[in-house]
Length: 158
Image 1 (cartoon, helix red, strand yellow):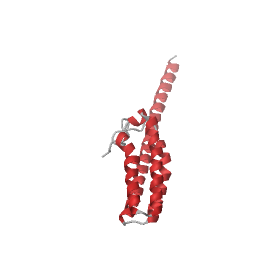
Image 2: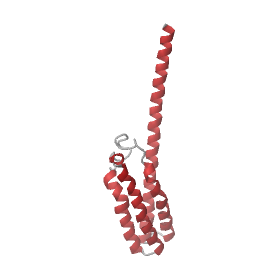
Image 3: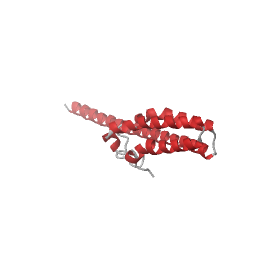
Image 4: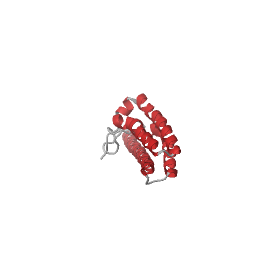
């Protein structure tokens, strides 16, 4: 009987080790997802800067067109960058994603859809070459597209 008890203890220890290992792997996966999300948002920031540079005369139209094309490729994927369990409550200091995202998921999912509409207008303005129109569309996209999410669902990470 003592042999069965040792086997039982060994199985229990192995089970706990596997469980803790799984938790560590899941945490690493979520941290990788957070990094991907942050890198994507930084990429969007670089795209916005390329468009701003064109408006200010420090960049060219081709770079602005490439930037809006990239922005438009990102917007439909934004929701997928926010898997549950990757908020600041689980990863303080690593992300600014507020828990409200997942509490208000249906509302949150609509923001990137609206962002795409602003980006369509911005793309048209860039194609026109009218820098005043581009500046206005860029401001509108930032305030009502990106800002709609950042104001309610993002806490600045230092």
